[in-house]
Amino acid sequence: MPTSAPPASVPAATPRRRPFAQLDVFADRPQRGNPLAVVLEADGLSAEDMQRVARWTNLSETTFLLSPTDPGADYRVRIFTPTGELPFAGHPMLGTARAWLDAGGVPAGERIVQECAAGLIEVRRDGERLAFAAPPLLRSGPLDEDEVRRIAEALGLERADVLGHAWVDNGPGWRVIELGSAARVLALAPDRGRLDGLKVGVLGAHPGAEGPSSGNGREPVSEPRYEVRAFTTGGVEDPVTGSLHAGIAQWMLTRHPMPPRWSATQGAVLGRAGLVEITAEPSGTLWIGGATLPTIQGTILV
Image (cartoon, rainbow, N blue to C red; front, side):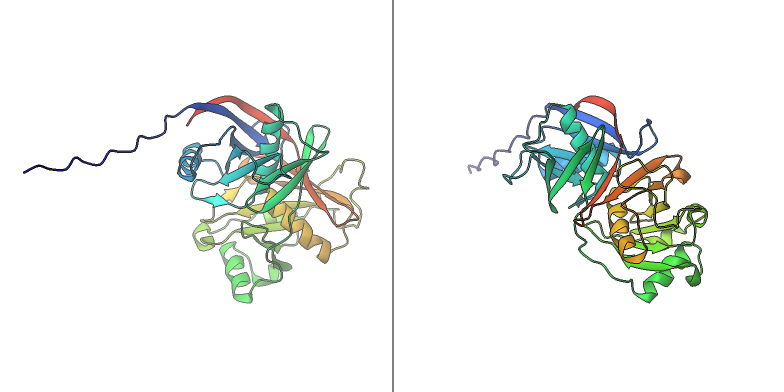
């Protein structure tokens, strides 16, 4: 009895070498900031391909540069963690822009315009530094009291230690609490398992930084205003977190008298030296910037 032939298998796409870069973001010395992997010329890769690469690099984020679908964008970027895709993230905005510029990218206008799942994000150049325009918050307002108590207990705090709290979600889902000092933030010893399922930022003021003026909007800020720590899903601590700083800046402007320019530090407990610079324009635009340092350049087989 004749049998039918098995269906022809679809051949897998042949891997090819694509330009690749790894950068340190929010630090001007190697191995002091938040690393980012960037795959350039990523057209033709599937979401599954991108997720596989992001799992392999095992960095907090890996980005993929694609042709734009919006005529107002210079390029499109997709952002993947080892476990999923993000609509927006901060240090990938700056690191991807630097990799694109270093590869010969030329913006159509005065500023670089990146297309991502959260929309069009502008990036401006200030000498060697880059800054992205903070996107609007998707969710704001105070946290539920039960959630505040859960976060405080997970961080080893009393409820009275929390001076303020809010949603500052611009895509990744950040919640934030404010403590009385940078020293208190640095001393936290969280029970990471109890933070599972939450993305929590914590900030506290550095000594002498509580006054209304830390910068005039033109000269560099000499002393950081805040210390920040960020705990992602599963309680993993992130070294330097641009999206969180963008949300915190929007919240701080409603909470305290703020100068037109200030900075914040992050990553000390992880052996990093992250520095994030915030500029608030009279128009309401907030720019979140810092140094970007290419550390690896070459190709990747995907």
